[in-house]
Length: 328
Image (cartoon, rainbow, N blue to C red; front, side, top):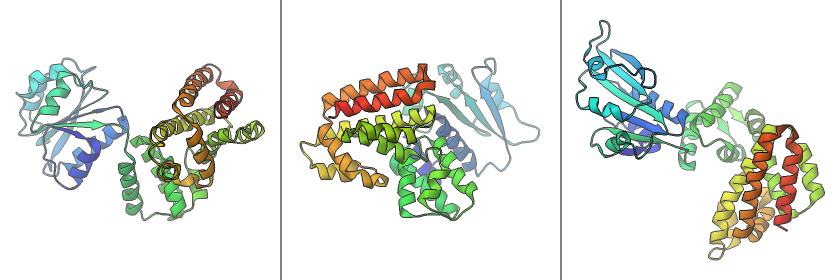
C-alpha cells in the first residue's frame, strides 16, 4: 500500500501500523534512515532479534529464501534490511518465511515505474513508503516534538525564524536541532539561534535579494560586501533567490485575483516583516516575463560560480545588479 513518510510516521506513533513488509524509497536519504529506525523500534513483539544487513549491489549471490529459513543459534527472530533492492527480489517475496522474519527494503530514487515499486504500491499488506522533502506542516511538527521532549523554549521571533530557515530535508533539520540541544540552554533568543545555525545569516541574504527592487546599485554592493563572505554564502544567496522566484511565480499567477496585501501576508516569511514594503514592490513588478529572465540569470550565475568560485563576490554582485535592472 502506498503511503508518504509523514503519514506513515504519524500512524506508527499511533500504533496503527502492522508489523509487515516495507519498501522505503525517495530522494531524502536522511528521512529513509529515520523511517527505518522507527520501524525497527516498533517491532515491540520481537523481544529477541538479530538485524541482518544486505546490499544487493554487492551481495548478489545471497539466496534470500534460504536466509529467512535459517534459525540463528542465539536469536529467535531476524530483521532483514535490504539496501538497493531490484525487481529480481519479487521472485523471492512470495516464498519467504515471515514467521520469524521481518523485511525492510530501502533505496534512493527507486523508479516509480519499476515492477518492485508498483508491486508494493498496490499490495494490501506491504507498505510502500515515499521519502521526499518535508512539508512545512510536518517540519513544524518535528520541531515541536523535539523542543517539547527536551524542554527547550524559543521565543516567538526565534521560533518563526527557525521554521522558515531550517532545511526541508530531514537530516539537515535534525542537524540543526542537535546544535540547539548541544547549546545547553533552555531558553534561546533569535540572536543566539542565528549564531547556532548553519544558515545564521540567511535573513541577511534574503534581505539582500529583496534590495534588488530598490534598484540602488551602491546599496546592493555595500550590503553584498558585508553579507557574502565565502562561496558558501554565494550559493546560499542563489538558493534564497530561487526560493523567492518560486514564491513570485505563485504571486504573479494570483495577483489579478487577489490583493497584493493578501499575497504579502500569506507569502512573506514572518521573520522578514521589516521587508514588507520591498516584498510588496517586488510582487507588483515581478511578472512572468521578468521572472523568466531572472531564472536564466540564476542558471548562468550558478554555472559561473561552479567554474570560478574564488570570484564568488564579483559573480554574485553582477547577478544582483542584473536582477535590479530587470526589476527596474
